[in-house]
Length: 80
Image (cartoon, rainbow, N blue to C red; front, side):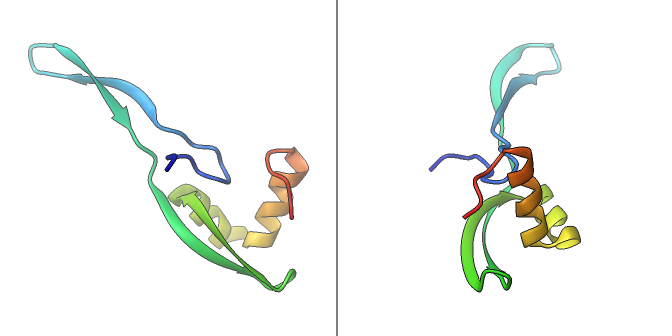
């Protein structure tokens, strides 16, 4: 299962743990992803997406259908 947001495209980032003695070892920063079902009344359809919590906040602010239309207009996703 890929750890990628289906709307924003957020992916894991890589960096280092840095100890007190300044030793560096590899680590991974994972995005905060949630699997969520959305009902779109304009299409009378329910979809399930794996989205980041920042995308959830935007969806709560604008609405799922408006947000999907914006992403489609930018060419980031293909709308139904």
